[in-house]
Each structure stands twice: as C-alpha cells, then as structure tokens.
Length: 216
Image (cartoon, rainbow, N blue to C red):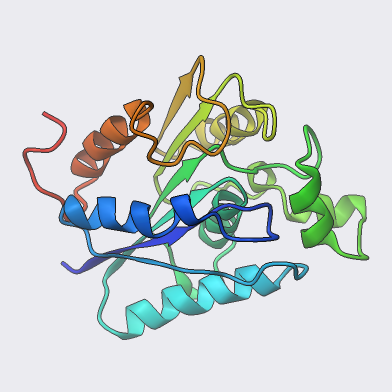
C-alpha cells in the first residue's frame, strides 16, 4: 500500500511557518513515511486554501497514492481538518489527520487572524459555523491525532477539546494529547517532543508506512 503525508504549516492563514514545514516532512520521511509540504494559498478567503488542499490530495491519488495523511499545525491544522471533514469529492478523500494546536472553531475562542482571512467580507454566523471543524464531524471522518498545550494563549486548548468532543460523539477513532506547557507553535522543538513520540506510536497503530520498531 502506498502512503503519503502532506504537511500544512501554520501561520494564521497569512504566511507559512518555516519550522512547521520542511523539518516536519523530513521527520516523517525519517520514520519511513513519504511526505511533502503544501504551501496552500494565504491571505485569501475561503475556499482558496481548501480548494488547493483538496486538489493536491486528488493529485496524489491520481499518481498512485492509496492513503493520504494530512499533518497540520495551527491554521494549517484548520486547513487539514477542513479537507478531511469536508472533502471535495471521493478523489479528495483523506485517510488520517495529525493536528498540532489547531484552529478548530470560528464561533468560540476565535483565532482572530485566521477568522479575518477565511471570512473575508462574508462574516456571518452561518459561514462561521460552516468553517468550524467541530460542527462538521460525522461518523465518516477519518482517525485523528490531536495535541495541544494548556498554556497556548494564541489558540486556546478549548479548540482541540471541542474537536475531540465532536469526534467522540460521532464515534470517530482519535487521540487527544494535552500538555501543561508548550505554548503555541512548538513544531519539532527538541525540548518539547512528547507529542512526536506519541504520534509515532499512533502512526504504527494506525498502520501507516513507518518503521515497525517505532513506538516500542
């Protein structure tokens, strides 16, 4: 089976955080999982980023990839989650999602930068709901691995808690890892890699193409 991980860095939908891009793809490749970075459109309202992610997933599948894993951070986590929960057709199907301190909701605990860019001039309650990941979860969603820190003051941990609650209610397999410290935007900071070790173990359990000795 051919697997591929697509990495979506954060940056508030205004830029791409370099430390959440190629270093993460290199880490995944080091585990044995083919990976690449998608620098989705920034500074453009929805659905610019969503269309780009969906198109890239479909392109990977047309090239022979059987399973696609999306790995997203902060706003990139929102883009990854949205692609997984609101796929643009069967060819854009996502098979697993890894989210780091993701932007989840545009209704509560709102991340201002992401909301301003995504909503553009169409800031309505209906549009905010349609772009909130927790409101889009169905039993058909793929497995999720999510991590967050309680001292994240940019995207509060409530975002991941809302997503986990929705996934649990829908019976979707997922792991939520919450840490007391870590802040926002940790990426692969060598002083804070508990999430990476937990994710490696999850990848093995979910039978992604990684070395079998990883995760104990």
